[in-house]
Image 1 (cartoon, rainbow, N blue to C red):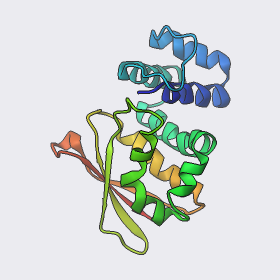
Image 2: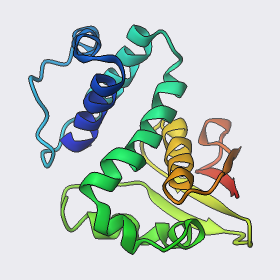
Image 3: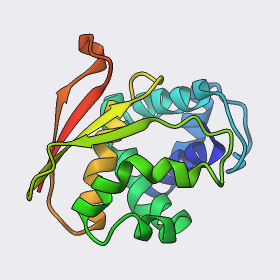
Image 4: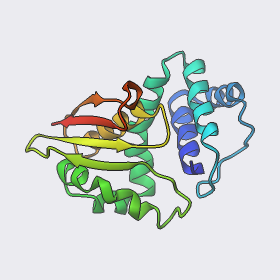
Length: 180
């Protein structure tokens, strides 16, 4: 993953829990980086180690850490770093989700070595949509759920996100039903 992801984890922990907590997370993770360069690729293991260490230091399940990070990514990193790109995604939640499958194509212009997940949508209704999540990375379902909840917050729309199909149960991808 790119450094911007690890930097966002650092920012979330520092802003929410303080610099001392970030130092404890970094120490616990064994990640020996003084700072993350946003447009540099890092091994995925770094991100997983940071999430696991945050879980340990904050004494909360890693799923809650990842879910919180997904929300933070949308509300803070997405708005600040990709504001115009986010706005181009749609004028409302439904439009953004319908356009989600092409979102990473635009981001890949800035991050050419990006190896993003793939999103597809189905069952588009007036008050809901199914988001299909395909990724070679495992264990990030709660992060994706947090992203979807964060999009609801971004568009000021209360949403419910139900994880209806999981790769961990033997399927080839995950499905999330987003209801508003």
